[in-house]
Amino acid sequence: MWRSFRSNSQILSTGDTVVPIALVGGNLLCNVIANSCFKFSATSQTWRGFLAWQIVGNLAGFITVLTLTGLLRFVPLHVAYPVTTGLAVIGVQVVAARWLFSEPISSAHWLGTLFVVAGITLIGGR
Figure 1: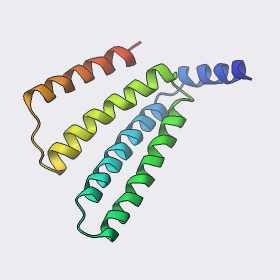
Figure 2: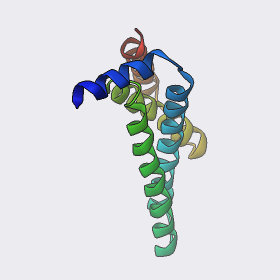
Figure 3: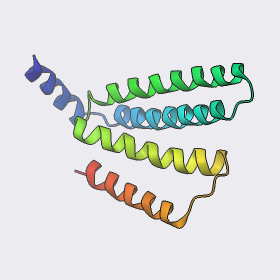
Figure 4: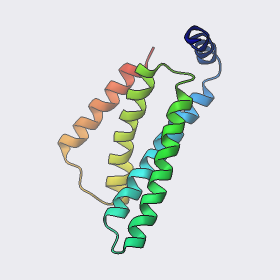
């Protein structure tokens, strides 16, 4: 069974790259949405706001898991997980923390972000 799944996985990975790229993009988007919702939840003044943001954040998180699962049909786990996790770190830091919440990002954090980008490039490159 595992051998046939692996063969199907390899066949799919040599074909079209649009679907894996879309899955990585969807994963990144939903990860940023989920983490932003949790921040909104944490700063909510009412229990209804807290609960509403938690629900939306968890739904986005669920979609994040689904996109990673779909991506694993095309890309090995040792590549898919670090790439999606690294992009999530960058997306949450730059998009959510900096642009959406106007949180300051130090030079050391930007340097760390560059290292994450370098790591993603090394892991994702073939």
